[in-house]
Image (cartoon, rainbow, N blue to C red):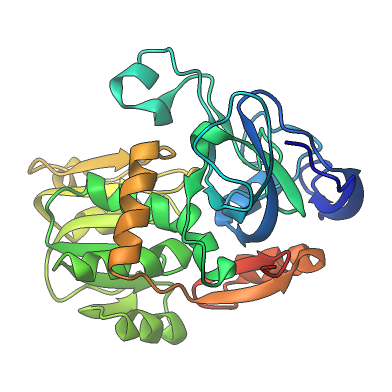
Length: 338
């Protein structure tokens, strides 16, 4: 299926350290197994800041960032089945895997050694159109506001995987109450868990936001919660929070580091790890995570708090995200639903 539009607007990162620039580009053509997507909205993720700051190795350059993509199927490459023209789909961070290695064939495709990632090694959704591997596109609800769905594609998915790795923990500490945290908090409450929100010291706005979502307790990361935690999910990219969280864990508890990049973890005494406490990381996501979480998000239903920006204002969105100037998630609104 061919698409008649020949050009599109996109925001491009030429190299780390530079602001994104607006450009007019040819609309990409879908290859074998690909879908061309007319982008409705794209979330702005902290991972995009890590890309722009040069903290992620081996990016495609120049690259169009963005990996929380919601849009409509505009054209197909060869060999694509299971999707309809005009259908709404979502595109996540994990954009391609080999499908043949030990990790791919054992349910751990998120660890594939040759995986490629949307908005990092594959051009992403800070654009009017993008191309995605059909294997890594998720069907989404055909109705509703695309911008409200966008944060589910990374913030929601990574939060869900982090919560899964916390096992059956009942008292969950959440460090860094931003886009991922405000979604996973709703999942935790739905599952009958208690969550304790840790913010930057003195951030009363984020603490109030956490309480509005049902936090059992909310305070600064320099404060002690009123109970021992069974698990801690760290979304802030600050390695210094790892020993802080360990000190609040019950025996057998787990600290889950949910970011793709984190500053160095400082030395800490073995005594706060002892007692079968553990530290682990979250790497990417699997398609199973996506299907499970998106179904659960609709069942709950998850409500995202968003700040909207035009495509041309992507740099402003990134700056405000860096400064923590809004609650929830930033989303670029690319086009209105026809």
